[in-house]
Length: 79
Image 1 (cartoon, rainbow, N blue to C red):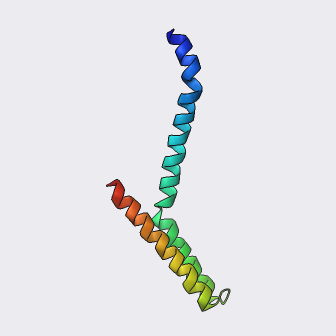
Image 2: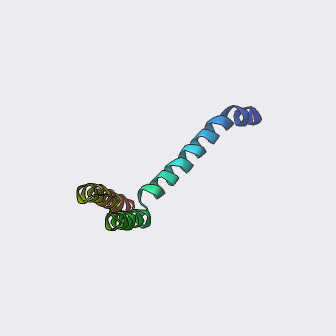
Image 3: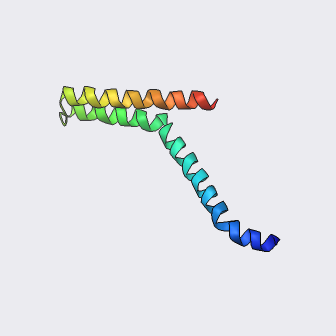
């Protein structure tokens, strides 16, 4: 029965492994402070080059700062 069990449960184990890998990848991306800082710098550059107005800048800056705070909270929860 051992080989039959391995054959039957292999797809389930593979699905679980894939789900865990995706979870780790998503969590890493969600807590990537470096990426958020880069987005903030790019946003500042766009404002300085008059590609966006101040209202758009402040709106997007607020969204990025909220994302940064969530990332930090997630990191704190893991520790």
